[in-house]
Length: 485
Image 1 (cartoon, one colour):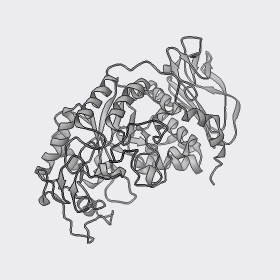
Image 2 (cartoon, rainbow, N blue to C red):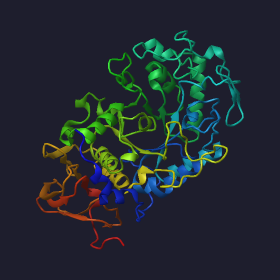
Image 3 (cartoon, rainbow, N blue to C red):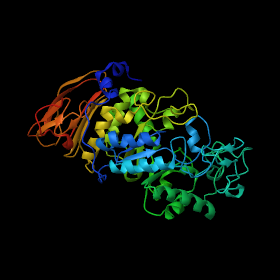
Image 4 (cartoon, rainbow, N blue to C red):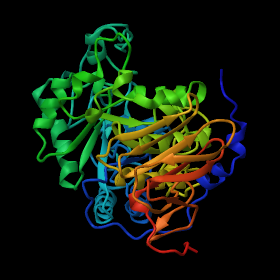
């Protein structure tokens, strides 16, 4: 039975979540530390906007990585998915020029944020008769002058149009075409050389890692071969969507690097929408998910927010709470989604008359979920609790849960339809006054929101409204009595 959600939309929590914080934290150090591991996916942002966001928000809020959309030349059109149809490996797209991309990487690094590129290496463009790409390159379905010709692609000879139909057939999934996209022969030495040259070009511009798009459609050995040709070490995360009973499973790819755990977001959505938060006590590997050290997790990403079955920005308060849980729970490496408003599945980002992506203006066509105060502040919670296990779990058997990250932080989350009052919580934290980072921002030793007092025995008392939470951590322990103005 679905629980009532009207209270969420009326709650003060949502108003706080959707308003930009008035406090600007100090600028981040020049290099990210080992504890800054949260990724933010700035989906379809152009390069000047990514650069500006690294300086103004990502660095100061403690994000360790920004994942940017594919930067190579692509087919023309207004849809979001044109970026996933390469026509050449020139770094010029509707998101900006090579020089703007280079400047973005440098600016993000100066703000303490590393850069992950969404790398399209499984395929080229779709069967649209060919034409001229964004930067002027001509192309056909199996003809990319100076790059690939027909012999560099798979021609699986099935299903009439060569498309994948049967996901229970390993050969078909990895040799036929994904929605008519020309499927590269990634087992070919020549193709591997061209792909490695593209990835190494990005590394020469300072890129720190790659999201390997459509990894499921390439054997893990082909990705390993590409990795071996990289000019220097780089972070890899592979897109492998789990399918029950299918022959290709995400676990095959963990030897290459991290793998996206698509079950995470769907399971989390189901629990928040129609089950009990108490079930989350062992969320992760015990649910059949990948080992924590190999799993890249997210509430939603650009595909799943369009395909359904997950929480998205449209869920407002419940979405913020799910992200708070993800950032507090130690399983996997989390990615926060930052998207734009869309009314149809194919709708592209805000753009000019020539489909060039406009500069991002948060809360005006761009959702900027990563700036919602509860999500942005919980990035600091994640950084402060890195390496600490779960302790002091509590649940009421239903939708009120609480737990500590041993000695470093504490979260209590109430998704009941009524407030939880008159209750104390054992945190295991040192005595002191802490900023509740769900409702306030900590900076310069003070908090502009509610303050929680932990006593000498590690306890605090708090009332938690319906569909709300309280979170504290050692990195937001007050050193000054005055609140921020």
